[in-house]
Image (cartoon, rainbow, N blue to C red; front, top):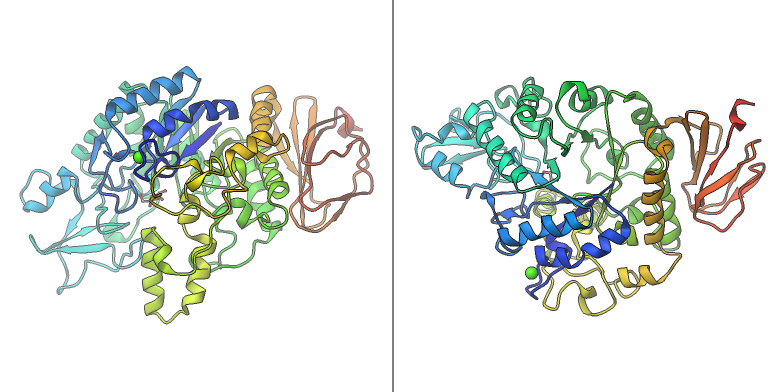
Length: 536
Ligand code: GLC
Ligand code: CA
């Protein structure tokens, strides 16, 4: 069970408004109480923060705002004492343009570091081709000093490393071993699907040498060690996911795939082009991943991360059923097969925040999109609607610890404003209320540790329900469990001619013996054991 910490927004310890490593250390007891086994720590390396740490200028130094290497070592030790491993964010598709490798690389065409990055000549004074950056605009930037273009699939300040250069790969592996020697528990690999790119053919994701590189990396670094590795793999299908995560192939422990995340965007367009979620599509996507990986691949389970909007606002209901829908979403996800990830604040049902002007946005992705769409003639209101629904700042507002000023996140001025609902939604409140979402998450973590069925059981979707009910079985040896979730704010009929044995978890006080002719409350969710019932 992994918990993601976005350090800038977790806990500030020195009043500068920016979360830091000492702040995180102060909150380890809270995370131990929740029951997690590992922290995925978003980047804490030295960085000019063009993309909040995903632009690294020194992989072996800690960002001064976050603390020192001594703080980092203390964090690893203190977490270890509580049975928690630290998973580092490995951002090696690109560096910052302020990394010494890039400073050397751009200095002259015959510099030894020139080939650490991807340089091309322009064609008739234009970029080599029309590849686009994820953060919009051309992916090629002219560097007037030598007159060539360099590739940046993200911001201009994030030049792409040239993975075809064996010296680059070696430098990356050495750096990984530096961290492994410090006692970390693994790596989350940022946009790792891109490192096999062939920019001249406009191939970016899933390039032909990608898996060779990962096997080489495995052998040179974490292979044979007890470390967790998870690749951020956009565009993965179950077949592709097996390439990454089949243990026999010696690549990664598991993938993050994003198929479900794209379900509320207009097909073929971008995440900003909104459409409502169709629940049957969500069922299909989850069923596909649950069944097609078999035992040859391993998946992650997540609703949230630092790039995604808050799930209770997105697919739950943060006005009338915040806690109830939050519990339903948690139960639905955590009863599936795979490794669950919880993003900071998800366990207390933190919500999206609403901005009314672009000046309130901090994220480069939202700001670039705003400028781009304004220029293309979109209405301001529509652009803000998209940002409020999908912008990455939604996940990045400071963690809400208590009802004191700035939610107990900082004694200073937070780098990004705290969500105004912090007096009601905060950790102190959640810990006091035995009915809170926090205890549902805590219970789900405990259940997974206790029951191999949750880890290993096979999945079977129940198709004979209303569209709004997402129900499935898990089968393991002689046992079967039934998971039933009302994915809507309306009552739903549900009927099954089976008697349940025992209730494992539910978000109501109801009794679940007979499942015949029931009416489910909005967002009702329950998990029951069926014993040998199903064979009858
Ligand atoms: C990944 C990260 C995101 C970052 C991008 C570039 O998608 O999750 O936050 O902006 O890579 O590093
Ligand atoms: Ca601080």
